[in-house]
Image 1 (spheres, rainbow, N blue to C red):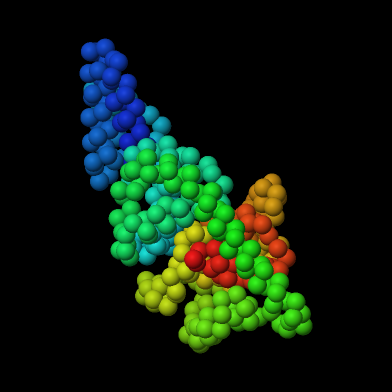
Image 2 (cartoon, rainbow, N blue to C red):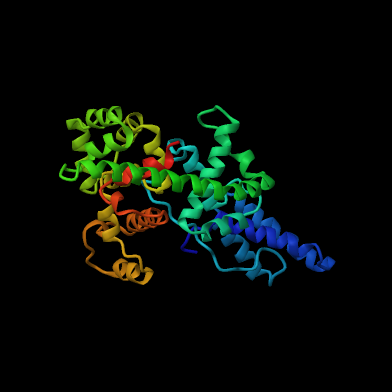
Length: 336
């Protein structure tokens, strides 16, 4: 056995075994109980692979009288080493991870359905669930488990997702209108990030943006632009500096902090120009040994940038929005 077995897969095998035993004959029930015993032992063992090897070996030596009938191993999907740990995620990020992986859900089919939804539908559903939790509690890091286990509540929140989608769309339209109004009287003025910040979010927001452009932050930005990773200390420092909305954006884009730092100042137009709309063309770029510009990154980061472009395109788009950065675009989406 050369791959690590997925505990999720073992749980599913155990559920299937239990379901089969309900209508089985006494002889079949005994065999299924034996299999359930070994599956439970594997689940509870620190090294489930070793336990399965023993169970498979017993099955072969005893001609199926004891042990576990060998089956194909489904491995755990590797997680990126730099993925934010749960303690560094927002409530939004925790919900997203839970729905992706089926954590705390009584019915894992919900996770299967969620993972087949378009990126925009996923984000708006999580927005709806996160808003519900925010209204129900004043705790900064609430326990999301009760919400995830309340299937009736989740179904009712699905219905509210349409309203969430409408609200987010209105936010984007307001940003587009602000830029249209500003451009009408400032056609020849350079559209710097500082000027766009003031236009969209006010003079105080522009001051905060400029104040954070310290030499130390610029060096850190250059470090991650060069593909560097962040130390735990640097990660914690950035989280203290970042306003809450930027952490929501990072989790919304399913990016690590370093990946988000590499994208936050990129203009929307540059991202949309780099990412084709045709899935077949995206696949060709993915398979290419030589990628250009924003897509010349490792595969995991490549997929996140493609997903970010899909999220941007999911809204009614205006050319006026081309100059805004990824940070500015999604700030208008995540903030009230």
